[in-house]
Amino acid sequence: MSRSIRFAPLAVLLLIIVALVWRLATPVDTNVHSKLEGRRVPPFTLATALPGKPTLSSADLATGHPRLVNVFASWCVPCVSEVKVLQELKSRGVSIDGIDIRDRPQDLAGFLARNGDPYERIGGDPQSQVQISLGSSGVPESFIVDGKGIVRYQHIGAIEASDVSLILAKLEQAR
Amino acid sequence: MLLASPALADSNLPPAYWANRQLPDPQQEAKAEALMAEVRCLVCQGQSIADSDAELAGDMRDLVRRRIAGGEKPSAIRAWLVQRYGTWISYKPTDEPAAWPLWLAPVVLLLIGAWLIRRRIELRSQR
Image (cartoon, rainbow over all chains, first blue to last red):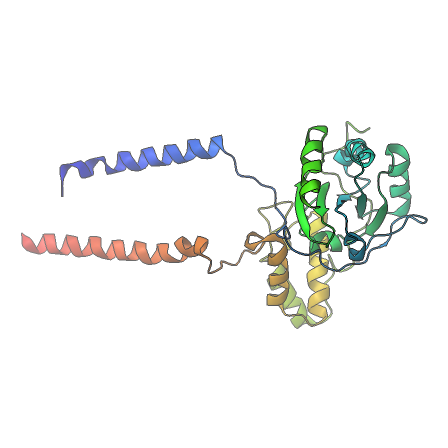
């Protein structure tokens, strides 16, 4: 064996250090992304979340224009500030539908009364079934669905003011 | 009030019906529990949905039990979940290229060990 084999343990140590430093510098993305991007929204029909408010079904997401589907809940803290950003998007002509996760009608009514209502339709998902069928893993999340019912983009976490231009660009692409 | 509530709040609704109830048929319940132990919780990502207390895990247990009770095979339910979340949601190792090191590493290590033993025997017999 050549003499330089004595440096093998040092080389292994250096490799380990490089790997650790790299992973510290670029942490793993712990968000779970839906695999439905580029695929059709699975068929679903949701129950009425709020009396007087039209509910949401998959047929309502294939109307010829891109729509934003917001997965939210009254007990979701970041959803409260997200409503303002959704109102901003609505004022720019975005059609927004809501899927309300694990909520009673009175809780949803209270949430909308306190924060405002940017949704055209709201479907009630009390056992997260449609949320799971969309590959969503938490609230809030938003999906951009194009006019043919294909999921084009998933936004994990609340849409913030700094994300508005990105969302509008994605909606343009989905046209 | 808002400042005091945690970022990951829970809803006001009780758990789904089959989240914490066993199926009446013991064979179906066994199949359901075997599958639940191999589905990763999306909230507490180090646990299976069988172990996790997260509400979404409860809803997923309810989904698994209802579908098993409806006659669906565990492999079909697993495939349905993988279609939506990717292979990461299943603890069962796959045969994808990304998993090949997992399968090959024991074989490779055994071969290296066998080679080292052979070398040692050869060196010893040369003296």
